[in-house]
Amino acid sequence: MVTVSSAGGSSRAVFTGTARQRVAVRATNTSILAGKVRLEDSSGTALRSSGLNAGGAWLDMVTLPADDTYSIVVDASGTHTGSTTLWLYDEPADPTAALAPGTRSTLTTTTPGQNGDQTATAPADGSTHTFHLATPGQNGSLYVSAASGDRLSFTFTGVSG
Image (cartoon, rainbow, N blue to C red; front, top):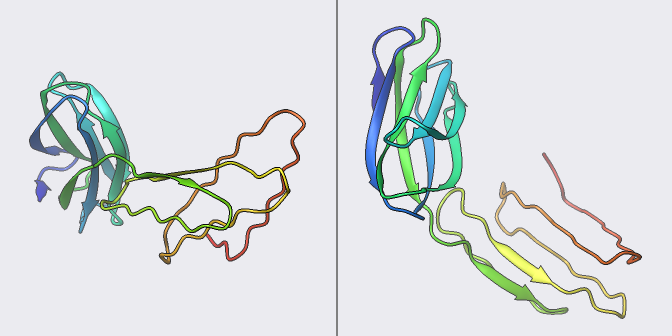
């Protein structure tokens, strides 16, 4: 937990990181109503930043560029003060899998912010692929690439948010 005790002040948590290490940061249980959270290297260069409010903050995965001492800095805005709990996630490699028509494939992520990548090749017979996210509240994205002249059709069901 870090505390900002003076209006508009800042506080930091420090950790040692290694080159190519993947990390993400979450701020929770915050009483700081307005501010910013950022991840900095030892020279003060910001690698990632996000607004901070009563709902907390999320800094998506970043790959650390070097062996260094890094800081998670919490800046309160204006007259705001308070505290927040910081979580540092060591992000493992993203799981990958190939999909084949008529088969089921599962990707398991183990930390918040981790992504997965499943690749499917469209069959020439026009059959379809179905993608399903099994965990309620889970986010998913579908990226498609096709050759010029290919016909693509999409149907989304059960989509909310």
